[in-house]
Amino acid sequence: MQLTSYRVVGNASNHDASETGKERFRVHFQRELNRCLRRRFSVEESFGVVFAETLQEVPLTPAEESELFTELLKWARSCRLG
Figure 1 (cartoon, helix red, strand yellow):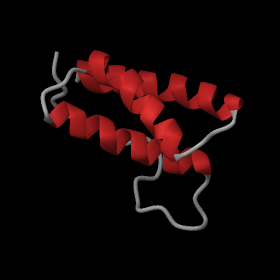
Figure 2 (spheres, one colour):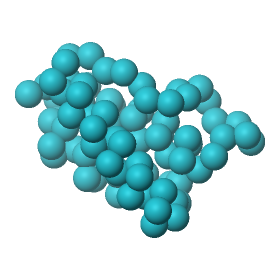
Figure 3 (cartoon, one colour):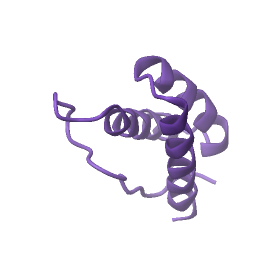
Figure 4 (cartoon, one colour):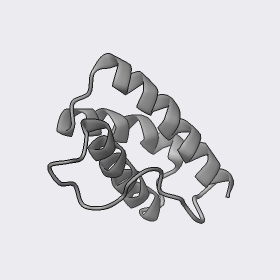
């Protein structure tokens, strides 16, 4: 199934000094996943790769990583289902 529409979770503005690592991670992840989906990759084949690559760009604590993984997985599933 391909993504037909999506919602951005949290603040999707360009990051500034006041943004937390979690907010920056969320924005970066959603942008990159949507880029993959526009290139016709599925959510299933893109999610893990994009999550891992985003962790390299925006490091998180293990607790933040766990929380965002769950949140973004729910987001990706809801977008995929429309």
